[in-house]
Image (cartoon, rainbow over the protein chains, first blue to last red):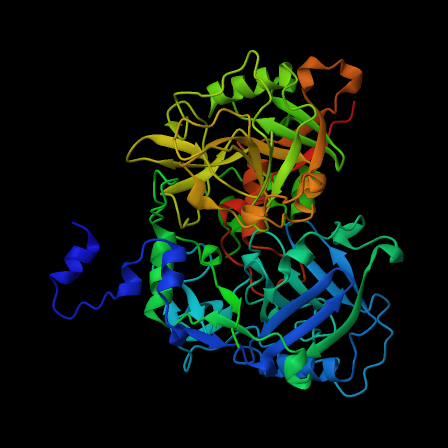
Length: 293
Length: 293
């Protein structure tokens, strides 16, 4: 029996028009304005590079101290004139000061609390129904892929394609935001709970993933001239409205998003012969679009 | 209790020197020549492009008809002068004849049997102990990531980073090998059992993954001049030995490989604070190196 017919036979079953849509484009076409949230300019970062503009959304609800420090670094123009120094295939793109010499004026170089996890209480967590290799439970919080462990009541952002994290040395408290990285390959989930994850790229990740791979160990560029220059990094809220890119993201706590997950768990496009019946956390699309103003 | 100490206390426990190694480099350093297999030149394909040389290993044990046909296409020089036409971020690089006009002289344009799966019987399957989102069981067969379903006694190659597949239209039997693709993003496991998977890239995948993304729908290059030229494609066995690249891969049916999996399930490098305790099929490294001759 079709589950929508089954639903019609159940008291209190609330599959909506969007939930009955069959493909991702149908789900998006059927979505209402309230299914979308405008990205908060205080959490939006524009990174201008010689390869183009990359836009990140920060997640202060997961790493408030690191996000604050990244904003502080941006506001003292710390990143302006630095470079992308590492492009490791199927892993990460990383930027910062290749010589670790640039002075830090107002921000911190060390943050005692690594913020690898946080209490799961207080987070609206949309649970993915499928088994995950790494975590007891995975899903979405405020538009970010995340995991939680009911046994310890902790939650954390997961490493998926386009996730943004804080590079660190061996000491857990050695990262502060002066080195940042973006995942450009298969989800390196072994990093989860081992490093501070602060957000994700919401526009332009393909400019980073298409960069030439570094030829030195761990994908660092052996020669300085291969590095990709960062001309400026800004918090959207600090720019005049005329210079902002207004983006909206599909909310992940709505029936529309649940319908999207279902549309991707079991694809009904003519091309698919065997619907997977499942979806991996990092394969769930997180749609972002320019907001019509 | 340390599991190696536990092992020492058990009759018949066979953890070897390599299995006790703690990091991937230690496992590889401790491996014996017999832990490696020389890649069969009959299954090795060299693709020369203006971006460099890409080497693929074909898996005839999974898709014999398609592999035979790909060899036939190569031997009639079908791919020479064609191009990479599609680079879709976090998905695939695809090549073939953008105009679908090049005549096929000896190979087939259609293969009735899509070879999406095969009987699991007769395959040496090294099972990964971790849960998988998509398949009842995953692991490795002859160096390739694979899955199997005990309920149906079928097995199939899985889509991981660097996997090579046969592009097709909506009809299940519409692929033959004239269009091939390589995965360059997070494992698109929803493709498993929906498309013919014929092997994987064993050298040079980073040349494909770093190509500029296509600007048209599905990552196709809108303008012909953006396409990346394929100068020649050859089966290694058809070349004189002096022109061959002799590669060897860590066998996936050895204690050394089991030790490698364990080293990556629970990383003991000083950097890691919380070993994952698990590993995703597509995160297991499949080491390939130039053979010393």
